[in-house]
Image (tube, rainbow, N blue to C red; front, side, top):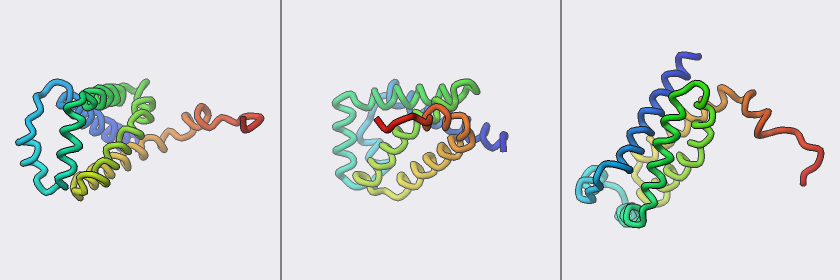
Length: 138
């Protein structure tokens, strides 16, 4: 089980480090991007161009890179995995609502499942911090 978790950690780390570097440092070429995902809904390309033009993708790329780096180290991978949940959910929902391209949806769903596998493998550790018993609701 431990070996599987290492493999998943390093796979996710590699994917998110690459995605972060791609967004932060590689030039964006809309024609290549449209060719690679030609079957995606046209609204997705408009949305992606808006994110690129506003600079928001640099923010996403920074956190992809940060989470990927955190996944590498044993001491920080739980934090990186927790931080990845909302990031992957946003990526998944972008493809569900905008691109409507099944390979993107399947890929992001797989990334979410792998990340949740990592999280629930250490459930007892983060449960005590995030689901701590309190005396009252407020």
